[in-house]
Image (cartoon, rainbow, N blue to C red; front, side, top):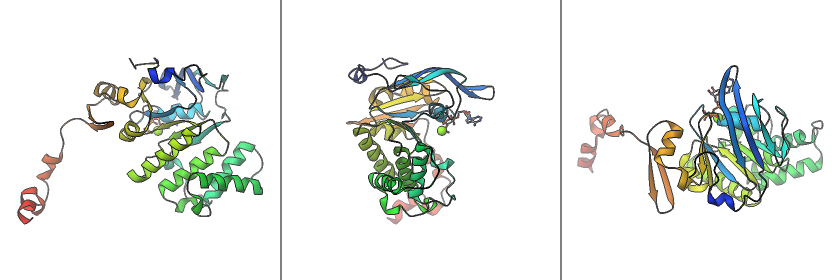
Length: 294
Ligand SMILES: Nc1ncnc2c1ncn2[C@@H]1O[C@H](COP(=O)(O)OP(=O)(O)OP(=O)(O)O)[C@@H](O)[C@H]1O
Ligand SMILES: [Mg+2]
């Protein structure tokens, strides 16, 4: 059974480890409106976890609470056995924001964006040492975008910008990195490459949690998924968690799940609009005409 906080078998083998992150009875909200109440969630070192749920369900709020950017109303967040101070940015936790929230007109190069992460870590004045530049360059190399180091960040593609921000998150040598919708503005190929990069970093020991709307990427690539909708709905391996019933409970609408060998494909349920919309196609483009002209 995967609902709630019970740990499925694949977690048992790492259960002897102390959790890296524990969210205990956490309630967060804005003004007078709670977003989630009494949330409990535990992550273990080395987990690579997808956080999925509908828009407005509180994924970013949870991520931002862990980062100290949203002050919880009640509850606690523990990192490596220590309670985090509410509203204070923890060290050793990296963050990759949603690209849509970044001001790309800010006149800085990719290298400078990474170095800014280093200044934040060191809390020193923003002039760079040779060592800072070297570390930043090495990180850009590691995430595969060293060739655009001197380009203005606003001129890069969405996928390149994501990688620069991953390099920036890594600059503080974090033990866990939280990414808010890292694949939202990329095409399928770039998404795939990004997930490979995250898998490589995870293999090197980094714990990763990423929020995403891309259920099929999670189903195909990630070993663990948390379904969230104003609270924890269920968690586990995608093969166990992505059932029509769990998806409906999470997203509130009918979903269909196709299994093909070790692949899982998820689509929204309900009737397809295609046949209905075909009548709106100009006569010449309708299927009967195209087959005649073929
Ligand atoms: N700064 C804010 N002030 C007031 N309400 C907010 C603020 N940020 C988020 N909210 C509200 O909190 C709720 C949860 O938002 P949140 O951004 O955490 O959802 P989400 O799951 O990340 O959504 P999405 O998938 O669209 O990014 C929403 O109703 C949203 O309108
Ligand atoms: Mg969000």
